[in-house]
Length: 257
Image (cartoon, rainbow, N blue to C red; front, top):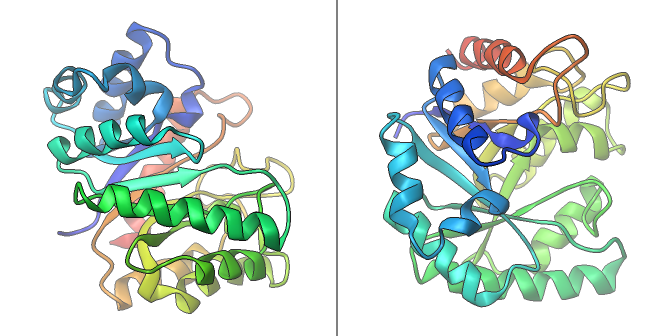
């Protein structure tokens, strides 16, 4: 599979009712091939996944990734994985946990391993999402977390924005690419996101401190061929979500061409 670009819903805020359908229309019009969808939007369709898949497919889109909180129940996670399987999507991004230290990382590793074993029954790959204000925040903590999990059940989700914000042990331009280089064998999926001191994680791609040139060079050198999902926490000042997403997609396509 060649690289395809998906759009994550976060920048649009809460998409109530028909706003979700309007978001899908906008994403398609911008030029994305797929979508990354949070659990708050997949959950209402767990009993009737065909309804959600029809919304996505009739627009010529694909489900690139599904995101779910760590505290999702086993029953609902199984239903989500079944939905993903029917959509031909194997990217499950698990996120969120209480901030702590080694004890919390061990607890989380056990949870990730269990969820990974469950998702594997459906042909779905569980990834852990390194993130701000969780047990795995800086690079050392993230790699410790990864080392505590079973490679058969848990893969790496690289968020270039959070890596750039959180991996303070390194110069900002080296943070995301170092995570990739150090843990390439565990990598499943990449999310393009940028960060700057001024606009935090609400930064359009290429306008922050992420070392995208090095990231792109590594992805191409090592023949990365899964989805790249684009995310921004909220629109930048005086911009709308669609405009930010369009400019970021143009940047990403040029970067990876």
